Length: 183
Image (cartoon, rainbow, N blue to C red; front, side):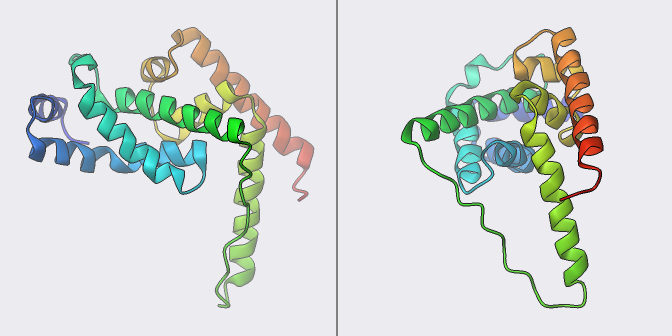
């Protein structure tokens, strides 16, 4: 992501209204923000939520604390947007289509199917965790955030976040053990 000093200069310039610097900031953090949104939304809404995150960040740039890293701040914005979208979906009672992609008929078809099934199985275990445990596991293992950054994103004390992470890991281990490799 670059040096902290380089990042702070880029952030200062971007939030001072330098469109080119803000474009670099978006480019730098686009993938991690999108991946976070995708874990919450798992559909085409993830791209919109990621774009809305950067728009909201720019519009509310004065609320950013310059002594903090920008990625946890962006994650907080993205997380809130995703939760709002999920709540709106529930109110609208929209169902999500879980269709599988078509698989190429190559010599690796069986391996690819097996891999997709295993990923689906693991994603199911993660989905079965309570929301806060799932968030903690994802932020730590997928996004590589520190406990402090996770606490900022999840708006909770560090000790609580550590407990959620511990319980999330235990839940994944338990689910995997119970399934015994069965589909």
